[in-house]
Image (tube, rainbow, N blue to C red; front, side, top):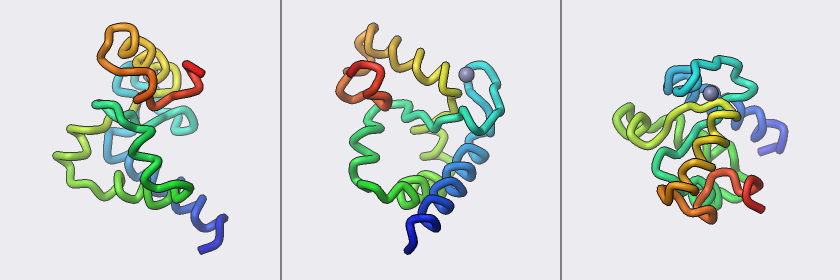
Length: 108
Ligand SMILES: [Zn+2]
């Protein structure tokens, strides 16, 4: 599959996942999809993505087709600001380890 098609599919599956999770930041209601992330509620986002290498289309496809119960149990939508704050707080309070964080650039 061409890279361009893979990227387009990744965007579409990501948007589908965001829509199924309510389409807005869980914390503050932000709806601009350009800044919305799919947050791993229980951490492990880096390990999850590493399973797919550069196949972001397959990574987002997996999330987008999860049954409702698993989707809402394991994921939520956060905007970029709330996502960063959430991860910083989780590391400070010990709920997450920096190396398990979804946003490694924050602690590099
Ligand atoms: Zn937010």
